[in-house]
Length: 320
Image (tube, rainbow, N blue to C red):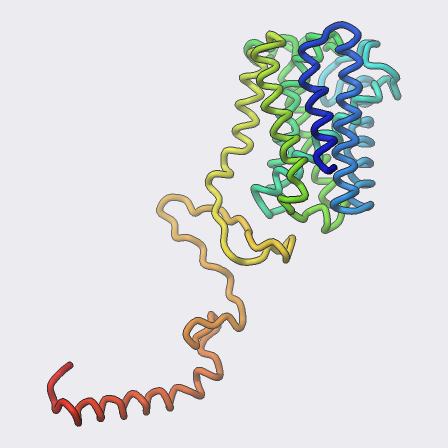
């Protein structure tokens, strides 16, 4: 059953480039609602009520606030407004818009947790991963007429002339701030990593980006946005290949036996594991010889002397 929300969402996303007109507009709202329900439901089921409530408050509530600010002042995304096609609005913002922030913020947060256990790094990686989605979203929604910039910015990405670069930078800043707020307020359970329980959300994250690249490049006639978005998303994940793991439990989840460490730069020595009291290797701990080893040292030395004397008694003074 835990894979059912993802299966339904995938079917809705597959249908999007196939249909057109009012059916496509209706599918936008349905897809966002399904994504929101999948992410929030997973957060409540696997991390508890506190994490689920904070997720909604920070991402949906914060998303509504920043979008309302953007529509009224032009900050931080530039001067833009929404059309009428996306349905009911709140503070001049279609209701589906803040739900979309929640939909992708939770999978981005979980995916970043697979790459690092450091909170600051996780916030940064998740923020870039969430902001990279806007490289798909803005060109696609502008092409459909769902929103538009009222004051075009002369600085745009090559091939994506309808969306100012400032909008993407605004998304990145808001995404990082949003996830930092979530990390601070959601409690320790939000920081746990469980690849088995999180598999549907990780699959959702991957599917959303891969299918968007395909849709933009093949079905929606938006090859430039497909290229820019795929490049940004890949850069946010490529450093996962330069991680290594040791055997010690994660400080965020004592039950997890793998914890990532940064691979040393070329010419640097690998960092030594932290000292652990009572970790014994041949009677010597990382903090020095153990009491048992110190008590047994005279006995071991005497045993060695007696064994040497017995060998010389049998073989004379010849070396071994």
